[in-house]
Image (tube, rainbow, N blue to C red):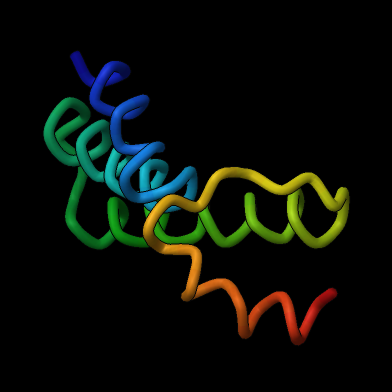
Length: 78
């Protein structure tokens, strides 16, 4: 069920938003980790993924409705 929700969220919140929400679900509710660790990992994984795929390798991943938030980042890094 979590993976199906992840795939649906890619279309709505984009790849990075879906990673963030899925990691919260996976770490906090399935793994029962602390909120601090959950938020650190859930926030850092989309950031690292953005810099790896979009900036370093220039592979554009779907951003869904969050795409306007990435325009300033494209102006800075691309």
